[in-house]
Length: 347
Image (cartoon, rainbow, N blue to C red; front, side, top):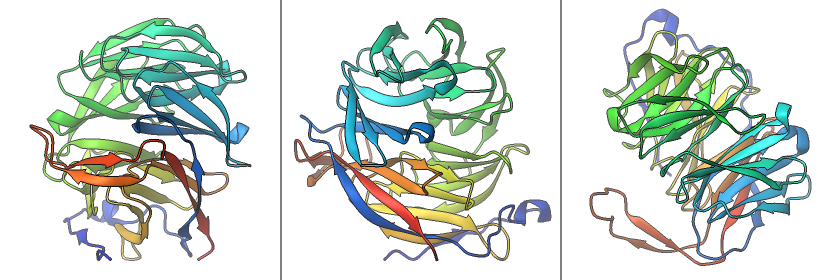
């Protein structure tokens, strides 16, 4: 087992104090898996809909919909060519999925799962988020380096914002601010989604190379950022400073925050789920390293049931990196795509 290692940073007293200390920390365990056979194995993000007891998992050219009460497939959103991200706007009864290869966003009905319309955003949409404050669906485009705003009621594009970096994950604080990882610039853009303006940028380059996954503790205004240099950085969103940096055992393409137990969860591609919480002495610490499966680098988290869902498949080979890349390629058995179920239990 890799020993947890906290990279020490000199922090002001106000930042060192852990904002979410807990008397007891739950332990996570792999409780099972949900098999979702398909063709060629390729996947990306997941999203959860707690009110309907469902999760949405992007894989290949479709989005699978799973009932979390039975762990069974209950529907599929097809023709999402190069499915990546999913955003849900329950207030409007609509969901949205990015199709990276098609250069579109698929808008679908949350009840019937039928496609309502296809929205052209140009080649390169990946992550996507719904901001309840501005009531907009936000889609950063990697190729055009543009953030698009979509009206969740009718699917119309209502705004756009250019930037000059390769974007990754995006989260909203629910109070009128949105945070977007700018991977190639090692910065996080702070955006006003109503005016579609970049208010400022947070430089994380001294701790984080290639910010990718992103989660937010809305109460404490802290961002949890997974980085290409196998680090999870904790960022004070108000002050714009990195307040902690923790080593991950491998690349994590997603991070989720559990507000109930004040834990950040980061799934690494090597098959390790890292759980991060408050340190008794202030700051942050790794509280658990859980073995999952190789390739399980994306996840969603159902706070109501304290359950994490991680996409993966059966790995059959590790290949040399593609030209210009640093991470090895991984080959998976066709038809072996599945979702791991990881539950919290009492400490």
